[in-house]
Length: 142
Image: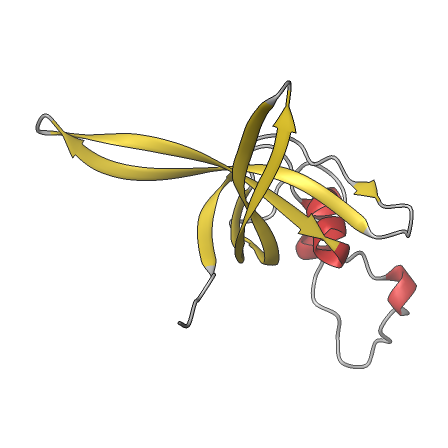
């Protein structure tokens, strides 16, 4: 029997990103995502929020740590994974998502870093004339 394990979610990050590294040097982070759904209950539309735990690895985790913060809108594509363990003699399990692709949504914020003040001042500067030289890569504010 064939199977297909693919999840695509759009939501907001629920807490600031805490980037860690494995002993082998691979970046990893666990993020929370709040996903809203509008449903009709007793004749009124209400928002229902689902909180999802997502694990990001490698460069995706590093980008998330650099650019995302609490409240950031993001699209995550990945796969479901069931973690199972025993705690105090009871079997526990948790369904989470292993994020394989991430797309940051929304505009740039003013929280500093490449998406903050440097980008604003760069955007406010007049466009360079074709005869002007382009700065080396290490001087570009991205």
